Length: 191
Length: 191
Image (tube, one colour):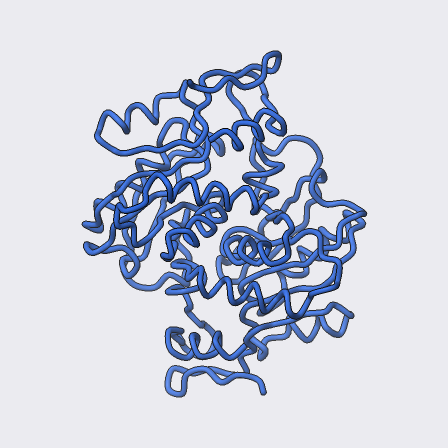
């Protein structure tokens, strides 16, 4: 997605060869006009696939998922990173290792909001190791829902998550695929 | 906001006299079509106030804030509940006690995204004790930004937060104000 790659080149900040900070427009400050373009692009790629619900994970996926859901005319469910007393009843639960935060989270979704009749599009801001995405897919499978695919804003294609999941048959659509990056040369994209 | 009160009456679940579960449309599964109506109502109430940025707090405020920001044509910044290594540089920080989670969070915003030229509308899903809202106001004040007001989806008007903040001069606009609730009689609204 050219508009997104331009924005990453302009406003993304590379730290070392592994950290890409896009907090000025994607995951701390959020440019919702850009999110609208992102949502339309996800619709273009997944139109006609019968998506009736979008699944994401707190926190930084939520904004992109909600704006994308406007294009799909469907609700969003976000998986929560720890159990709170305000989620009553039965939940699907999985574990996700966050490399950013250096810990393992219990990630849960209420069984009320994910079930066998659902055709799920997973939306998230980043795909690197694939741990979060695998956790969300595990929740979809536990629910007996059908996974349509995953829409990712930025994939670190030099990390193994995306290719491992594609090899398992998951349809992963990433709008910007980073081939490599460095503080000297900035970000290089796949293709 | 009549549409919202109807939805709370229909789909909200009261536990005891204090817990109102709206997780089927507001803060776990999210009805983005309703969020669009909510965003337009916030614009109606705060139009012409010069809002150039919306501030919210993770996680459940983010979706509402992003959809509302489409009406205001401005970006969103969400305050984060704990420091991650991906926020570099200087941050404003405050402490917020969560009664839902039974703990105190450090809440932070990067200084890059909140400053003296900003006219801030705070958006959140719930107002009860007012702890989260007071924390966000503290961040706005630390930044030297101007607080336009706070747009709240559901205020538990029988708890002290809203009135305490209004008495301090904060403009608080709540779209549904719950006067009382019980499992037997459901939700009663102010007015």
